Image 1 (cartoon, rainbow, N blue to C red):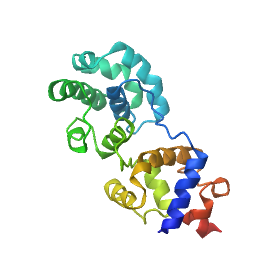
Image 2: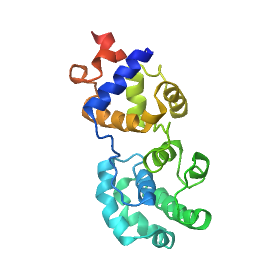
Image 3: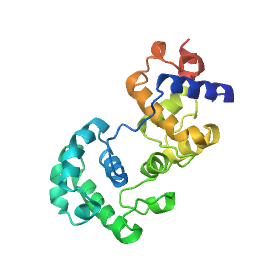
Image 4: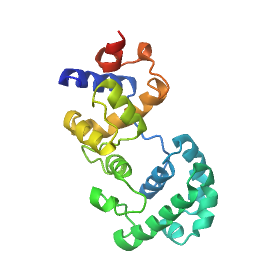
Length: 213
């Protein structure tokens, strides 16, 4: 595990390396981000961004999604994988947003988790990116891999446990951006195949780089 000073060093290094900690999914409306995150499950953000322009043009409102034929939605999102389940969840979520929330994406963890296909990862992303809720911690595959490699957590794979641990050591106001930066760093440097420690901005503070020195 890392010391508080090392944790602070990792945070600062990633802030300097990736100053624009933005979500890589493209959206204009709050519910579009919600649906895009559902599509991104076991699919790349790049692929989702290629699919959503036509999807959102075909269904330009929540009302349009709620009235949509699930099979037709599936045709638009087919290349994202698991398209039948994703299409069902999107249409069902649109209906629930209209009937239960007045067309507004909920702003609490409890309410977001009621929506079809929404887990803690999606809920935290919505809370952090849409509502700016401090402490929102998105634990995806990049976060799991890098948190363990860096020594922020110790051999953990359970997303809920990792979220709990990161909430203890990452300042709440930095949590959302920190998780976005982990995604960017995981893609650019600390890949699943092999970490490029020699090119890593967090090398002075990272457990894996320390072990390889």
